[in-house]
Amino acid sequence: MIVPFLKAKIHRATVTEANLEYQGSVTIGSELLEASGIVPFEQVQIYNITNGERFTTYAMAGSRGTICINGAAAWKARPGDLVIIASYCMLNQEEIRSFKPNLVYVGKENEIKAVTHEPPKEKTLPGPT
Image (cartoon, rainbow, N blue to C red):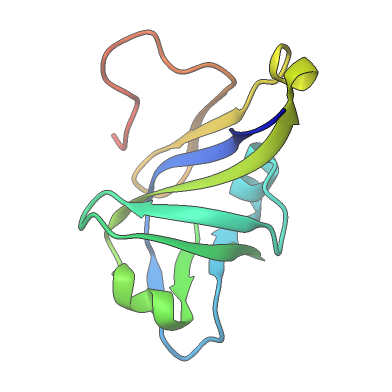
């Protein structure tokens, strides 16, 4: 059996731009892509904490701190919105036993605060400070 699992998450990133004129995708700072293991053109899910919107697009590399929602998806997020960016993978039963996702927690300027492979033990997750 193959099961979908969380591969990577960028938690509580702040949208820096929304560009209706671009063809599509989300532009993510290269340092966040590297820390998360998300690669350009990989499919990602975006969960907008601010307004509840959820949508699918693909990742593109950008400059440090950038989270730019492009194309039609720009209607679903505005600068200042908090979002979770997630990618998923398919794992077989053997892979599930040892797999650990990359969880990237960021601050207000989308700077990396922590990279872990396990959810925090406390009830509240790290967020912008």
